[in-house]
Length: 499
Ligand SMILES: [Zn+2]
Image (spheres, helix red, strand yellow):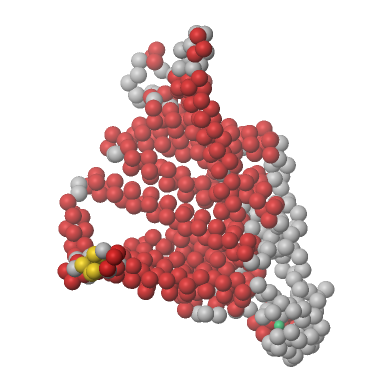
């Protein structure tokens, strides 16, 4: 057993005391038919049920995905084309004014979505008698059908992309291959929320639509569905089922944090034999938790979030002093919150930038004209946009982690910590784009810039066209370089981190 790092006074040990990356959960054995039937439990209790579902074997995962997801998609189609046969209409059949002969039974309602899809496909294929035989589909429509099947197959295969991008959010310390397999399994299971979402959509079609625009309620339901998917997905992956094997559980060697040279046997008061940096600089005790990880309750967490947000922007050595290996959960929470906060911040920045210009007048003059219905619709659309932007940012951050892992060093977890905290830099980047756009808008009204300049054999060109890229170059390029530099710096400063 090695000494606790705080008590090390003389020679450094070979390995630091192990602090496990994540405590593995012992998964229940779920036979596949039960996993298929129990999928609704995952929609409401993803964190509790996630590890047990992720340990189900492939046939169960695929069966649950195909059954719930495809049936859910069929329910969406039915809700759009013939809502009177949907589940929601069946539940409200007592109150509706339907003659007895037209009322659907339970089993008819259950079969209706599938029947409707098959009916649409048959119509698509127009079994009118190709090749001179009645009842045989025409060649053109067979191609259409095959195309349709190809689209479905392509959509299924493209689910690997969100699985890849969301992978860094559930990294427990296992090997990347195992992580990818678990990620794909959780993605296939999380898509089963399509079924409850389709029921919500049927509700929207039957009850809300008379007072609403089609597009608005569809967009809102889709946005809510995507948020629900992400919530189920990330929470289902939070606990790790499986053996404690992989880079997260390997003992960490005592390395120089500057150059990666092994410091085993070196005196605490000495210097690194390779680069000459004091050994005390590389002790785990020189790294501390961020305010975000140290916060104990929700009120403290808000202050801690703001402090961490500012620290990432202002402190150049932020990553040099954080205890990377213990920060994963805190950094994930931080990334999710900073993505949620991004849209209100972006609106604030836009308002601050546009206020001094004439466009502000136009926007504020047009605002109070709408009726209460239009106002409600625009609120719904803004909420949907907010949800989509937040999810988009989370996916971008996931992609950035993968890029950093690909170009740099192997384990995903420490890279994810750096990128998740670095996510703050998306706000200055947005502010630079916004400010540059406003400057260009002001420039476009200037008479002086509308004059032409003679460029010899290139012909005449307006000053405005020549000068329009300048604000972008002056504002965006330095911000982009600075944020990229901070990301690389963060990766370098955590590469050999001992804590
Ligand atoms: Zn060194």
